[in-house]
Length: 427
Image (cartoon, rainbow, N blue to C red; front, side, top):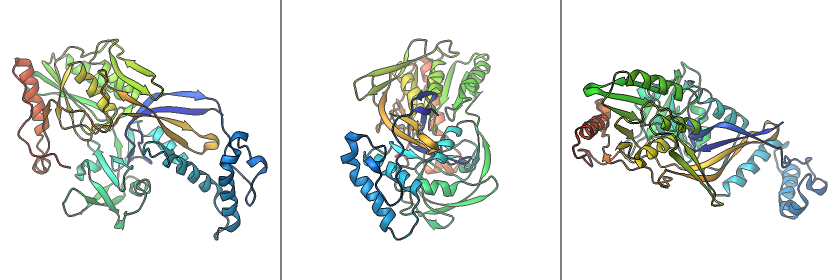
């Protein structure tokens, strides 16, 4: 049986949806078969195997303490029998944790299966992207039209309790699993939001059908396109949307990437190709060896010349930053909103033998066409506009208003504002 490698760039985000987590944030839409190499860790309970099992000769001394520990656990631990599979998985996770890179991690078979299903476009759950890399499960962004959005969840919301049970000290991945559940069931999340008093939010889980690219015509001849994720159907949905909008001869276009946590790498390149001429670099991948690979625009874009503005916010991550960064570098679009999330490392998913899940390892960083590294810094918009508490409560969208004003100024040849009236961004 062949292993499978899945190349990913992006944020370690859990998508509290169908039955699992969208982790990775930015995933290549292809698989690379590789040979089976390296033995599974196994040993008979109560003894160190001859030659330490299949441990290579040059590593036998190094791994002697491991096998000694294995034997001690089987011979001396109070609660017998121990779970050998759990020990093996724990050893893998501990090894990866020792690297100090939160994006290099182990995925159980269930998590790996779920991660491969999450971008199909249909889900059951609350409909939110969440970050599981910190001390608590933290909301990155709700999905448009989801129960999470209807309940008012926002970027940065920290889930400190689930159904009344305190999540302090609980692994965020375990917390994520407790949020999961069938459509129609209710979950109560206790949210900490900035310095506010924690609040309880009841959410009824539902089946969510995600239309990842939608659009409409606004006033003044402006086309508006929103992309909510970079999934399997996004490229075709975007083409269909652009074909309808461009037939109305718009003067300019607003591309809304707010609260878009990422998706397939190939999809990001295809999306950028609708706005960037063929052959232009969309992104670079910089490896530790010094090697640098590039992905180029594919050509035949439907909107390569129309004046553009791109909306970004703190929930725009990885694939969203690839597209927005490329459009900004080439001067194809002005960015409006607040600084994006800032995720730009490249991981691979390597499926392990015997259906034991997968290992995700950081192998490179991605750069914009101008060579900018966005990891931990994000993209800075030309026009800075935040959303206030009052804006959220009254369904106002000053960021979209600013995008429209910016695009109209571009069309008129007027100077662009560098910021709009606002307050400090919500943390």
